[in-house]
Each structure stands twice: as C-alpha cells, then as structure tokens.
Length: 383
Image (cartoon, rainbow, N blue to C red; front, side, top):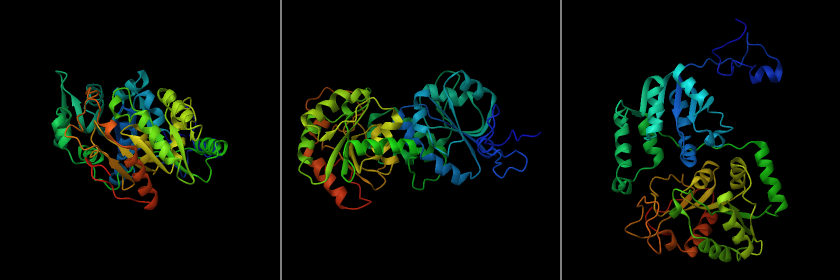
C-alpha cells in the first residue's frame, strides 16, 4: 500500500498536511507516527470545565508518550480546543461522532463527568480500560474505578463540596489514574488571533499600558457568580487614579449592556471592545491583559490558561477547587453560607455583593507589585 493508514497524520479522505506543504510521500516519510496507544477523553461541557480539563493532556503524554488522543465533546465547545496540538482528533456529539464511537476501539477511555449523557457515551465506547463514570442498564451513573467514588459522592452533597479542600485538577488526575505535575490548562492562540488583539490595542491606545481586564459576566446557570455592575463601576473609579493603567471590559453578547454602561460612565476610559467577537477573539482579548478580575467562570480558566495574573471573586462556588497556579488572589466574603452551590439563594445582599471594590483594588496592586508569581490568598478569607 502506498499510504500509511495507521499514521496519526493521515485523515483517510485527503492528503496529510506534510504532503500538502512539501509533496512528501508516505513511503519513507520522516513524519510517520503510528497511532499506537489510543486514548479517548469524553468531556462535553460546560465550556470552562472543558477548558480546565485540558490539564490532563500533559499528564497523559508523560504516562503514554506515543499515545493518540481523541477528545469527544459538544460542538459548541470546539473553539475551546482549537489549536491544541496535544489533541490528535476531536469528535463531536453528532451522527458522525456517534458512528465513530461505535466502530473504533480505544485502549483507555477517560470520562470524568458524572452526567448521564457523558456516562452513556463512555459505556457505549469500546475500550480496554475505562476510568471515570459509566451508565448501567438501569440508567444509573456508576464509578468505573475506585478512585472515581469520592467525586461522585461530592456531586450528590453540597456539604461534601463545601468541605472539599482539593482542586478540581487534583480530583481529575486521581479519577483518571494519572500523576499531576503542574496541571496547567492548555489554551493556545493562533498568530491571526494575536494580531486581531494587537490591532485592537493599537486602535484603542492600550499599547504600553498596564491593562486590567474586567470580566463582567457569568453563566445563566450561575447568576450569583456575577459581581454587581455597580461594584465594577466603583472599582473603575478607583483605578482611574492609577498612572499607566487602563481597563479593558471583557465579555460577550450577554455582557453587552453592562459593558456599554461601564464604558459610558467612565467616559470611555474603560475600553469596551463590543460583544460581537468570536470566542477565540475573546480569548485573544484576555491575552492583552496583565491581570484579570473575574468571577468563577470561563474567563477565569481562560486567563489561567493564558498565564495571566487573576483576582478571582468567589461566592456560591468553591475557591478551593480552583488552582490559581501561584498567579492569583482569591477573594471570598466571610459568610457561613458561602460556597452553597445554589443558583440563586434569594438573600439580599448576596455573597458577591459583600466583596468590596477596595479589596479588589488592593489585590490588583499587590499582584502587580510582586512580580511574576504570587502566593494565593487562603480561600474563605478576604484580602
């Protein structure tokens, strides 16, 4: 045969990129790489969780250096995994993806998500070893290995979640039977995405400035994760007194109204790039920032994946589960009910309302004064 069908670079229905670039033939190709040990990761959503689950990839490659990694996810999460060279192939929850799942066989299947949808996919997939969660014949989620029991029990108890003191990344590696080492989130921009952000910085006069990104949104599922827009306004008023500091308002369509309001009240000093950019362009805007202020949402994981300093604001969810990699400060109000994991508790003022702009300002000053790496502030304490 004149092609190598078992090469990880050959898609089957068209030439590989090396043939396209230089006309090289399969016979004697120096880039030939057999697929070898095959790993399937099932992680569908939410976007922030998909992104932070990429911390498994370096650990997998340390354990299985020549492994072929396939990631099965929801179509809307595709942008989160783009340009990630550690993933050999991405499959989606559609007809093609399901057909492939029923035909192919994997050496190792990792499903760290205890949702029934993900567990059913892990059960459907053929694999020699499965870790994480599967679905039994009665429709119940079951741990596939003993190390997965603890996270499943935590998912069924808010009290257990509140008492937890280990990061998501630690739990994830334990579930998947891998040794953690750095556990970095993998988010890699393309040159064109960086060019897009640099052009915006030029037009909006952000070049040479210390850029403070304010990520003003939160998911619809967790409205209480959002810091009030009035608190962002008061923080902006404090930041205007800093020499060579500028604010960049971050968000998408859902944050358009809030960011427009913050831009107007600051007379344009807080730059609003608009909410019409793609998710990848949003990531590129995050990359412009020296430090990002954000709740526990996708923007937090994106900032960490891009190596940014962060001031992370927590209320209804656990600050202990977020690994800030020594590059951030966690601010959590001193309340007995914090980390309640309720979508909307109805209390007024709520936990996020109690985080004061002066605390956030001081945290920003401390981060920017202490160099590249910082010590994390203990969770469930304010700075």
